[in-house]
Structures are given as C-alpha cells and as structure tokens.
Image (cartoon, rainbow over all chains, first blue to last red; front, side, top):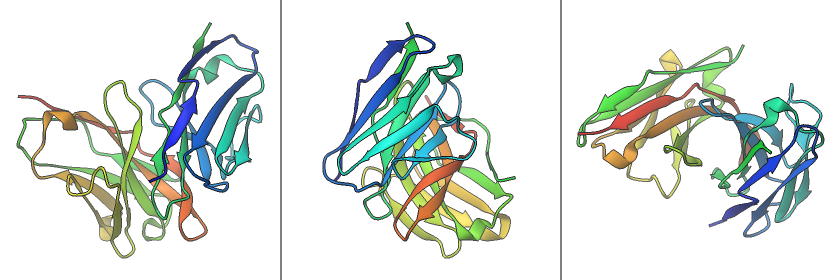
Length: 108
Length: 122
C-alpha cells in the first residue's frame, strides 16, 4: 500500500509569510496528488488537484508542484483566512484515495 | 449549484445499528462516485470507501472493509453509510464528498457535505 507523509506536522507563521508544506509518497504516484484545506468545524475544501492545478475559485497565492514521490503546497503570502490544516491525498492507486496525516498552520 | 446535504447528528449506544445519508443535488447523481471520509475527534481525514450510484459499484478502504456498508438509492439521489453494530470507536464526524474522476481511476473530491457527527456512548 502507498503511504503518505507530510512535513512539518505543524508550523507557526505570520501574515505575509511564504509557507511551504511537503507531502511524500512511499512510491511514485506520478502527478496524482491533491491538496485540501480544512478549517475547524468545517468540511475540507479542495485547493489543488493533479499536483499543480488550481481548483476554480481558489486564490492564486496557493500553488502546488511536484511529481513522483515528492510534492509541495506553497502559500505565497499567508493571509488570516489561511490558518487551517492542510491535507494531501493520493489518487494513484486504482480508486483508492489515501490522505496524508495533515499539517496544521497556526499564527505565530 | 452542486450540493451534498447530510443527515443530522446521531447519538447511539454501543451495539446499535445506524444508517446516515448524503443527498446530492445540482448535478447528475448517477454519473459521479460518492465517497465517505471519517474524522475522529482531533484527528485527520481517513478515506472509507466510494460508491458509483449509477450501478452501485462500491470500493472500500482495506481499513473499513467489513466494518461499514456503503449503499445508494439513485431514485432519490442519496448515498448511505451504515453500521450494523456500533462501537465507541466509531465516534467521529463523517463526511460525504463527490469524486471528480481524472481518467478512469484517479480523481479528487470537489464537493463535500457538511458532515454528520456520530456519537456512540453507553
């Protein structure tokens, strides 16, 4: 089974900071990697699909990159509404969708 | 507008059965897989399984196979998640989500329900 890891597990940052979150797969998953944002008490929200495609309506300060086993989610200038937990998810395995453990971004 | 509306919070005792629902609207319900995701208190997201309402093809995460049953009634555009005998460890928030396929086997969850909180306690 493909395992997903994320680093860091949490980070503290200030408004305006550039933030990078890493997701790693235990084997190559090509570009079948998605990113979600979840705020407390809310359902997850899709940010990025297929590693680097921005979901409609998502601000352009969010970007994704990577392929194979290593992926990154970057927030170019952190805004107050971006404090949340971020999850990666692989969809390489046939109709199996495994989430990473999450990265919590909070206010420094 | 695509919407997934889930049934309300439930409080159950261990050993009881339960079926929660997720009603889709604003799109062709039979043309998209629906997935279920568990989130235990203070924990991360766990993918449980998916169903294709068009023909009821169902796939389970190995972690949840045999523990829950996913079904759908396409006549009323509703997917279900059910337990035959709840345990305290089933206490969690459960989300349904629509799967947008990329090719035949990959995809992403583009629309989510609001979640159903299930509490199992004696």
